[in-house]
Structure formats: structure tokens, C-alpha cells
Image (cartoon, rainbow, N blue to C red; front, side, top):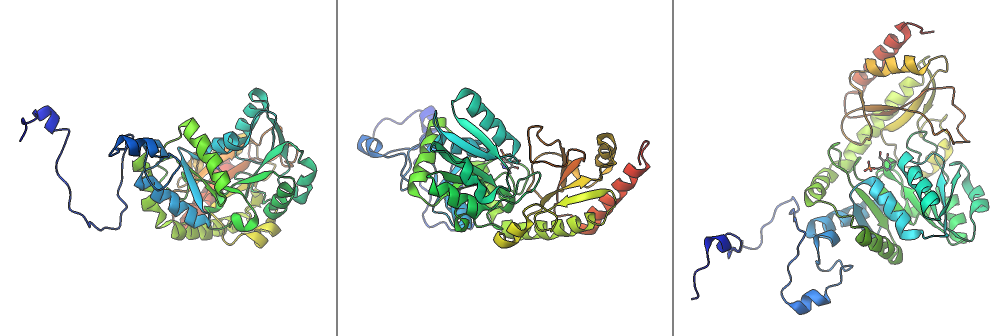
Length: 396
Ligand SMILES: Cc1ncc(COP(=O)(O)O)c(C=O)c1O
């Protein structure tokens, strides 16, 4: 027996080995930056890309590999890479597939920061970025140039809710050698089958329904083709976009209830949207499952279930000041960005001034997210806020 080690050392090096065959439902939460190797040879031989072993916390742990495989399974994909936020996942797509001299197409109604990133790529990275009408359908073929590598889509647009013709866009892009990335967050991968409709890369902001708790940020990129997965993996490694084990655990915990939550958000959302359609204060309800929403026929053709996110336009007789009174009077609907949690939310949006396809500049838009509160209580809340707005000074 050698010399007994100092307490300071013994504290750091435990001989305890827990018994094997522990079984429980929750996946273990492995927190790690450093991963240990048995020999120098095994360290040198380890390929960070391989999902069969571990190299470093950034490249994966049993916890993150479990979450990746679950997310891929929900979407019917083969591969998944996690990112620290939905926006980080958007950034990974651009850095994985675009280089100086390439061109990208982005829909006019895209999630705002995706557009912001597109503008930055155009101004500082020598990438040509063109914004297109989300309802363009197969007409997109005319916009695809020999150097177009990437076509972004979002289904539906998460503020103005147009439903694009994803199969037509994918056909046109593939014929000309471009890949199609879809921000599929609205449907959580449950209400729209990205790969069955031709998409190459499906993006989820796991911050929304997958987390369900309004308490963390995470994104995911799901693919079926190994070569695409590898390019995203390389960008992920180069940009160092790791995620924390505890956040991964929280998402795994919430996933088990996601399909039931999604169904309820969708049903309650439909009920509230239909009621809003009967209100004289409302000029248009932008809900993909309702006939007045642009692209509704495509929703009916391609989607299987709605989510809880939609928008409506106030009658043009109301000013922003008056609709702000409405928002301030709401009690159950809280004012804040993001969605996918259990609480109802609202956000007033000013539509991007550069959008040539947007016809409703004379009307105020409010985006609603329908939580898990009772539908009658939500409708009562909206109804009392309409009364407050109508009674406000200067109201029509
Ligand atoms: C449609 C859509 N995509 C992506 C994101 C980005 O997700 P995150 O907030 O995790 O960055 C959002 C966030 O609101 C979103 O609404």
C-alpha cells in the first residue's frame, strides 16, 4: 500500500463505484466539459464527429445525444444538432451552407432576426440576399440563380401567418441545386411533416413548445442526409455552440407532454380565433386554419393540426394609441415575446417597412399565443379589453 493521499487530493478522486443496473424513467443528466479517456491512444483516435463515443462536452454527452435522437424522431429525421437558441440554429444554417459569393433567398415574412442576419450577411460577408413574397409558390424558380445555395422558408410566417407552398418551393430549389431550410417551429414538428414535403433542413426553436416552460432557450436542426448533417456539425464545432446539460434535461422532461399540450393549444387557439372573427373591432383574423388567412388552402393540403399562435388585425378605425389601451386592459394575456409555454401572450407588431407584399399598413396587428387557460376566460378577457378600448377617449 502506498502513502495515504492528502485530504485535498482524496476529496477530488473518489474510489466509489455506484452499483450497475439502476433503472428509472428520467434520462441521466450528464454535465461535462472535460470527458475522460483511458489511454493516450484512445484520446488521439477519438473523432469528435462520431456519435458512438464522447470527446468533449461541446460535441455531446449521453444527455444531449438522447435529446437529439428524440427531436429527430419527432420530425422523422435521421440526425439532429442542438444549438443554444432558435436564432443560434438559424445562424448555423447560414454559416454551414453559405460562403462569400453565394446567394440566399429569404421570405419577406420571416422571423425578424433571421432577416436581420440576412441583411448582415449581405452587407459584411459578400452574400447576395433577396427577399421573396412568401406566397410565390413555384414562381420562386425565376429567383434562383446559379449561385443560389440556400432557400429559407417559414411555415407559416410567425407574425403575418402566410402559409407557403413548401413542396413547390422545394421542387424548384432542388432542380437548381439549392437546399431548402424550413423554420418549422409553429407546428413543433407535430402539425407539419417537413421531410415528407421535400425540406432538407428543419429548424425548431425548442424554446417554444418543446420546452413548454418559458424558462430556457434552445434550438435544433434536423436533417435526413448525412452530408448536410456534417456541414451543420462543422459549423456547430467551429462556432462553439454548446448547450447546458440541465437545459437539455428540462426539454427532455417536457417532451413527454408536448403532443397533448400542442393539441390543446391548437384547439383553444381555434376557438379564440373563431370568436375574434365575430367581433366588430376586428378586421381580419390571420389564422392558417381559417379561410381568410393567405395560403389557407395550402394549410388544408399540407398540415394536420394547428398550433396556438396566430394574429389579428384591428379595424382600421383604431389608432395605435387606442389598440395600446386594449393591450394594457388585458389581464390574462401577458405582453411579451416568444410562445410555446402554458401562459397566453400577446405582442403588437409593426410590419417591416421594406415588405412590398404587405397590404395592411393602415391596420394595427396583434399576435396572440393561446395558453392552457380555459377558453371562456380568455374570451372574457379579450371582450372586456375591447370594451375598455371602445370607451377610451378618442375612440370611434
Ligand atoms: C418562428 C421563430 N423561429 C425562431 C425563433 C428563435 O428562437 P429563440 O427565441 O430560441 O432564439 C423564434 C423566437 O421567437 C420564432 O418565433
